[in-house]
Length: 332
Image (tube, rainbow, N blue to C red):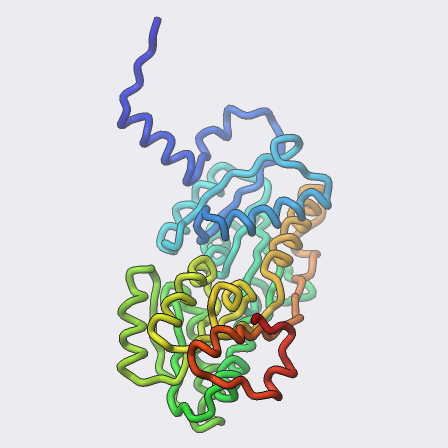
């Protein structure tokens, strides 16, 4: 007998499965299940981080669909979806939840004190309230912390060194990532005050906001702007770099990918992929029986300065020799 499936129902079913295919969980052979909760998009950038995470699990002898399953929940830049996605994972009682940012981690933490949570964040997890201590988290959370929010003041200093005639600079934050945004604002304002600069805060939480914030930065007359760490900005770094050049407002962000995509400078933790790889390794160790509370938060403290000399020329900027000498890489 032929079975007919209504086209609309079929599309809805497939769409739901791509976003968070938890319904299939009960039908699978018994094996540990890891919940992947991410505010990233399942695009090339997000999938690259996922690949690094999987590589980390392999170092602990866990291979997807062989001896572990991963259930994927992508919030696609909409942080207000995170609590519901996290609730689904908790309801399914996955073995571990892996999260890719501070809002993701806070959403999961609010819903469970028993399921281990492994995070990869760009700020201080103690200050964010994720763990009590880096050395002994003493909770169901642990993970990896990258040095990025802490170097916001340095990004302001780099802008000043690159564009010494500027009296005003901007700082782009995502208001949906409140804790990171507030910390970044405080750091930027302190650094700017010491340099005699004024900081103007602009906000974006979706791609629709980009055109407006660049118009605002242009109207204010900033000499350049820094970008606060955020998973949404990470996944849209190429677009931000493109708009920076189009509107002729130089910018500095945290990862090399921003500079290589056409941004003026990047300064921050050297490799986000390394953080996800380490997180994957931690998930594997927890699956083998170790406790999250006894695994210290790993800190990736190496930072790199990348300067795109080609973009500097587009802006008509002459990079100071002392700044070039300090660069870990110069893109020409």
